[in-house]
Amino acid sequence: MHSSTNEPAASAVRARMEDHALTAVPESERRSGWGLMTNTAGIASTLIQLAIGGGVTLIAGVGWGVLAGVLVAVFGGGLGWLVGHVAYKSGTSSTVAARLYGLGRRGSAIASLIFAFMILGFLALENALLYYGTLFMFGWSPTTTNALVIYGGLTVMWIVLTSFGLKVVQRTSMILLIGFTVLTVVMAGIALSESGVSLGSLLSAGPVVPGYDSDWDRFAVVLSMLAGSAGALALVDADFARYARSGRDVGILAVGGAIMIDVIVVVLGTVIIHAGSVVVGDYLEAHPGIAATQEGAGIAEKVTWMVNNNSGAFFVVLAGFLGFLLMWVAQAKAQVLNTYSGSLALSNLVDSLSGRNPGRVVMVVVANIIGLVMVAGDILGLITSYLGILGVTTTALAGVIIADFFIVRRGRTADPDSLESVNWAGVISVVAAAVTGGVLQETGVTALGFLVSLVIVVVLYPLLRRSVLRPA
Image (cartoon, rainbow, N blue to C red; front, side, top):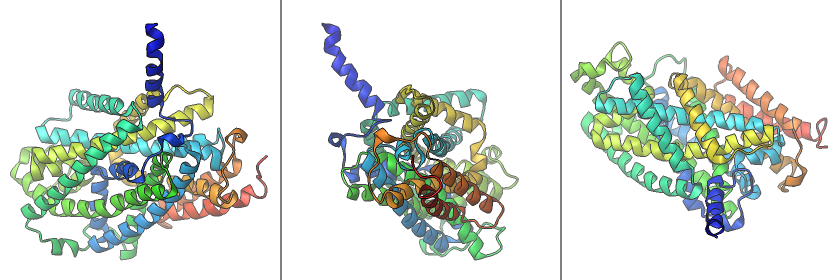
């Protein structure tokens, strides 16, 4: 009697934890686009994105860097809206939607690999920034014991907060997003005040980073850097758009997230990194013992290293414990969202290859383990290459989903009971687009590999699907 009474409650808990990882979200659980936007805006506002935002204006100059952000916001918002619309129609995450549109059941393993590489890479990057920022705050050394304690604590926290489905994830993200926005604006004001740099002179600053042949080279590189995150966000949009009530709600969450990551965070990151670099440089000169813990020969090199590898220290230097709090607020909301989306991608990967579903919560644990492995592989030191790969692969994946739904099917929904095992037209198109865009980018032919990748897949897939590789 006791067991039967508790069975419905236990089933409800299991369903909430599974969170429709491999099935369509029912109409009864659909939500407002404004609430869903707290997830896309939350995952877009982190230390690594602030560092990227400040970095692009150091490379291209503030005016050109902000312009690049606006252009990529339009591109990324549109891409996210289109992919999100497909997910909204199917009620499934981006990787499960790829089964229906573009890749087939087993073929969607490619989507999961691309998505998992992307989202778990950000999980690892942001864990590493939290680790180094925490060491800086308390003056600790990077020992094995400290790594085990800090990374272990972070991992447990993300697993617990992510295991209970979208409701808990969204509530956490909403609260922390508000805190992040307020604290970041305060931090930008502190950076300007303590540096003595006026807002006008900062906004008119030119490029600082050497090594580029022309202004166009600088502009193309920053477009590529921002596009890596934009393509990633477009796929994340789909994970949350499956809960949307309407196409308008999809637009709200996609455009809102794009504006946050490519405009607001670029501007705030520019103020904090540009003005904060002056304050951090003075701090390191006054504290040679702490300066010795940061990589680089001179103070300028150490500050440059910190921009990409220890940007959390900027907040600690600028505002002490308040800055330390901002660092944690910025990262916690994003890490919960990263783990959530990563668990969805891994669930589809295992199911598409083996036909088995070990459960989303198991994949939450696996996602965090993979993130720790990527930290051990020094992903922070590979950030530029990582963003380049991200741009060509994520846009190729988004492109094949869009091309299948809007061009080949002309907006008609797919029948889940008539899935192909592998849609070879989609698999070949994604691989060809990603490889071509990546090679052209790495060989220096063009920094805009993400655009090459998108154009190839949108043109090639319909041609193959309607001719030599038609559906069975």
